[in-house]
Image (tube, rainbow, N blue to C red; front, side, top):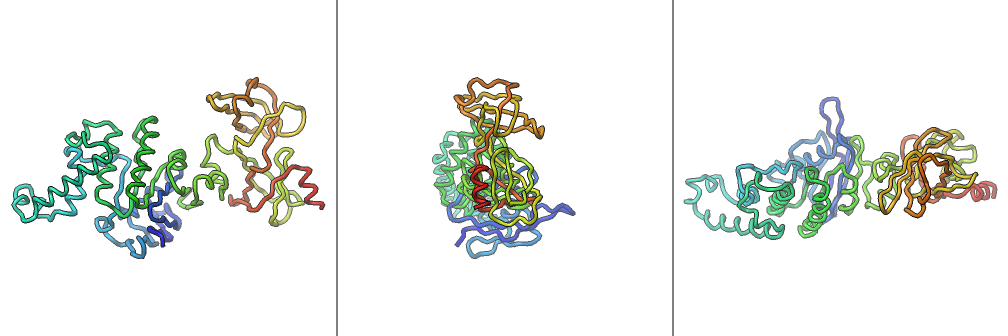
Length: 390
């Protein structure tokens, strides 16, 4: 049984349809990253799960219990926002204690003058302080408990916000781009901290980001959302190596994937330079439009006079462990990106004519509607002729 289930969640604001029937299941203790461009509906989906927005239709379940119509306070869901949403007039200890105070103290016990006189107040407050100290110690922020947010760095405020979310022992963590306000170096460090905290808490986490590096490096599974639709939910490696939609292939990967428009030949095949791909499913009459994709690391440079795709180097980026080539294809006038090792790129200069060879085992073929064409053996032109003609 899934720990969290979303069933056909739909949401519109006026004529603008934000979510178009999103469904997913999160297993106990699983970390799922929701990734996609700005405006694709990621944050809206999280707000619906937290109860801060209502869905037009669909269901949200924790185990077998429906929480679609529950009030936010009754869902036991912890959410960490991009802005951290800390109270500036409270200390770190007081900020962390907020959800415990609201849950464990009655309204009368929370009153500043009357509350301390109420039965049970002293013990409950002592328990809250102990839990706050324990959580702060586990996050290594116990030395910050007397400071207010204005006296802390961005990374420290981020840890306080995480402590406030974790201290209530929720059934689900929702994180809406919690690292976007940190500098690059601190973000890399904070990724590891969040993953470690998630494992320690052992509850499912949905983490929204537009940064594919965060999604691929942190998550057990990645959900790619484009235009209000969940296009693919799979492990980071499957998302990268086996995209099910051209938009997934375009969004995931740095540098970007190379895409080429092609037509299906009468023998049910498509070509990229001297590489031919034979489709194993009937695409109808020849001439059907398809898109071919190949990632930069699967293009190789050859300097012989024939074969491959004729190109000219426009720009070279040296990145230490790799070299990025930006090449202008002579035949179609488009820019193609190749990723090489330093030894492969030795001697290459801008303006040099080259030929690019595609690895036939790493070419993706997408139909006109963007969906991946499956079970496609990729082979050289000579092998393809043998397959076609027997």
